[in-house]
Image 1 (cartoon, rainbow, N blue to C red):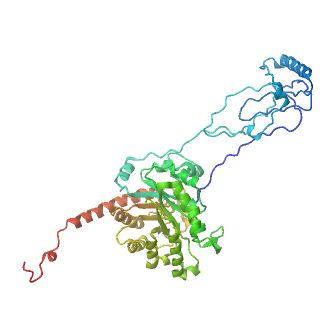
Image 2 (cartoon, rainbow, N blue to C red; image 1 turned 60 degrees about the horizontal axis):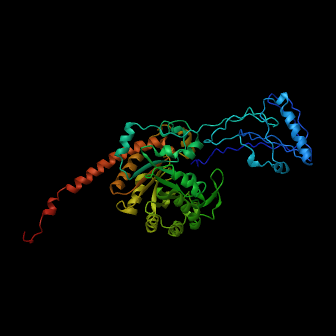
Image 3 (spheres, rainbow, N blue to C red; image 1 turned 120 degrees about the vertical axis):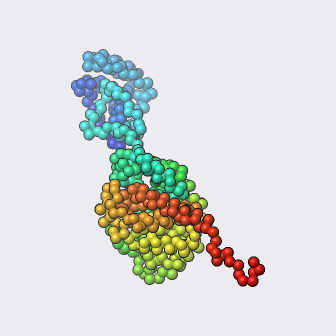
Length: 489
């Protein structure tokens, strides 16, 4: 999955102060101007920021007595009255103490060619005569206008669909920074990096999208500040699914192409999970943290050969994690179907951790995973966490190449959709939260998959509610009304 962590960083171009001696001075028309020769050890060079601040005229430093200073001032007056400088404003006399202490040029005094998006452009100024200014670069960038990301206007049909969906059901996508969603989620074309930084506000305005999976945290641990920035962009009812870093959840260290090269000494390190994942996630997201998911990458053969040993190690890890607030839960997602055993499910139940239904080519169909949930819960007794990641029969790169730019449903999967709808309706009827994140690689466009899944959930919910109502009002059977012999009835 694309971590979507790109960002556009603007590097300022700083003017460099001249290090040589006296420079030739020019008037406004580029003609050389005769200047008075400064007496003393050296002349103070002037600087002008490229941001447009008015430069200050170079002031000659007097090294002699007051008579020398007076003589120099007289020369400046004569120069200012010359025809070349007739139109220039009079120079301001510099106090003697400033003459003795020349101002040093510092890096922070040099203006930047790059203006902040919300900065006010400085007014045009006329250079003061006697100042050397660098010519404007032909390639100098112009000030960019701030462009907020706007949401695509929802259709009346979409609004009606969202109104019918039970409020405890949160549908969403795996990440959100896809330019191909223009007209579906976003109201204009934006870059991947801009959507990654600022797109959640428009995403959260979509009537159906009330959760999102932060997948970039799987590739690199995020900071409190990063989590906080995400939380500030979404409404209060929004809930995040967050993936733990792979440094904790992958038993092996992998090469660039994903092949394992060595065992990972940090695998299932509880203290690292607390410090690098749980604590910053909760501090940044607050009540908007929904499911903290530990997605276990495919295990090496030696671990799969001893499942009891691995499950015992997993139990120790889960029991060492801190208790979460009521609004959040831990969940385990696996990529090895052989782990889906009663022992594994009992371990999760003992630790109070949810099983994340993972729809993936490496995993069983949703019905078998639903059976595992039934073993965990009996009746629905906890949140339902689902990540629909990949269309059956495809590898990640195959699906990505086939479905980009993710702006339409390409390979619809009605069987998986129906199974998830039935499962979600059951948990919603039991009053349990439902959080489902769908990947673009599931059917071609995750937001459109959410729309179709919402329709299926509404239908399944109505049908199951009708069946339950019918069962509650059904009169007892005739056998239940019969009295046993000799009862005296």
